[in-house]
Length: 209
Image (tube, rainbow, N blue to C red; front, side, top):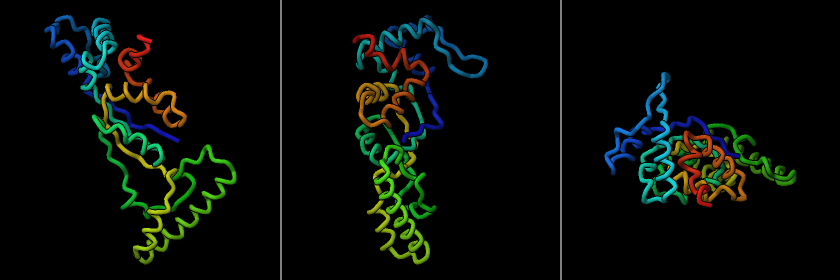
C-alpha cells in the first residue's frame, strides 16, 4: 500500500527563467499565470524545456529547481528502498520511537493487502501482542514493553513522511523503479506522471528509446 497526499509543485516560474539564462533569451519566454494563479508554460518554453530535458542531466539543470512536496504513506519495507535516494531529497517522518504507543494497533496500520490468509492470521497475532505491550507501556511507562514493541514491529507497518524533491530526482526514480516488482513503486510512478508537465519534462528518456 502506498498513498500520496497534499502534493505541491513549486518554483516553476523561477526555474523557467533560469532555463533561459544561458542564452539571455528571456524575451522569448511565453509562460504566464492564469486567472487561478497557476503558472502555465507556453509553447516556446515547453518546447525548449523538453529539448533540454531530453539532452541529459548536464543540460537540464533547471529541473533541479522545480520542487515537489508530498506526503507519502507507505510501509517500512518500501521506505528502506526509497532511502537510497538521499541526494536532493528531504523527508520528515512521523515518529515511531515517540508515538508508537499513542493509538491502538489495528490491521489498518499495516500494508497487508497482498498477504495470504494464513499470513494475515499470523499478523493478527502480532497485532494482538503489540496492543498488549502498548497497553502495558501506557499503564506502567516501563521500558520493557516499549522495547518489545519497537523490536517486534513488522516491516509492513505504515509510516507517513513529508518528502521534498525535484524533477531531476523524479526522472531517476521513475526510470529506476517503474518496472519494479513492488506495486508501491508503480503507485508512486503513476503519481509522478500526474505532475504538471511530467510527460514533457520527466518521461524524457522515452523520446530517445
